Amino acid sequence: MKGLKSLLLLIATTSLCSAAKPEQEAVLKQLHLPYGFKISIFAENVPSARQMALGERGVVFVGTRDGFVYAVQDADGDGVAERQYALAKGLYLPNGVAFRSGALYVAEINRIIRYDEIEANLDNPPSPVVVFDKLPSDRHHGWKYLRFGPDGKLYSAVGAPCNVCDPQEENYASLFRLNPDGSGFEIIAKGIRNSVGFDWEPHTHHLFFNDNGRDNLGDDVPPDELNQWTGSKEHYGFPYCHAGNIPDPEFGGNKKCGQYKGPVWNYKAHIAPLGMRFYTGSQFPENYYKQLFVAQHGSWNRSVPQGYQVAQIRFSSSEPISEQSFVSGWLTPDGKVLGRPVDILQYTDGSLLISDDQLGVIYRVEYKP
Image 1 (cartoon, helix red, strand yellow):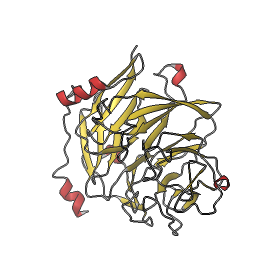
Image 2 (tube, helix red, strand yellow):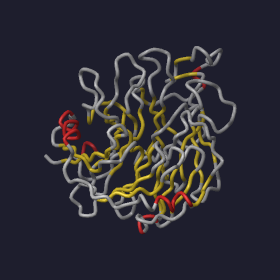
Image 3 (cartoon, helix red, strand yellow):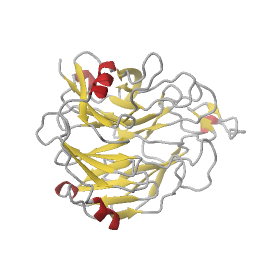
């Protein structure tokens, strides 16, 4: 409470510029999209912008890894957020945000908290309610993605507290869900090294989630993964097997990779797939409907960097069949990194919002042929 009271001295409704700054314009000019699509700055001055969630009144909530949670709002409908609020500070890597029934849920590393009636109190947020506080406190792969599923439950993940290890505690390397009031905690999948992005396929309602592969096996091994959870508890291989059929040199031993559930799609290695979204809006052309967009944050330890783009995974009969670039250019031909996409959110008008934790902005992609 004391921290939030002191925050009131800092909270302000910030007037955001309607035009991008010169350095932002320079980045926008480097970005490439399919014909008919336009990208612009929706919100600036959002340091370490990570996961986003959409409120009932069009407010976009933004988690970070620097302790802050923000809200940005395009109140006049011109495609640029002219209002910004700092809702909280000093939280423990509040990467994950989710919204339901007027309340904002925030996932810190070790707990989930809730801010009630938040859209009516953006300039004077209430004290948070603790929903669940029995999660590990390890910082390594501890930041969380948070979403409400079609069943009304909260879903998130606990990463492995290492590059590669075999943690014995049940919560590590898992997907879990729980009721909005914090009851009914349930681990639904194991063997997942670090998932910081997932969504439900619109037709089957199966959960598709990204998993970031281990390091120190070379530039091209193992591939990062897109996995599918269909409702029964499964083990996806970590740390024994990677990408379905690659035994781990340290932990593979006499394990048979076939006993674990493999990915439905392999990305390139080290591209760090994070936030993802199946498109269900009406603004984009029909061939983008129910297709998957994935923010590829980019490699940090590869001799030649790759990723740094938003990819489109094409689906047919509810299964992935191909991958192609949708927004690229954050990685220049000479290897300079201009930005790092993190999460994707479908906005009220059917455009897509993309957060960038390096540039501290949120982009807006619209179709304007």
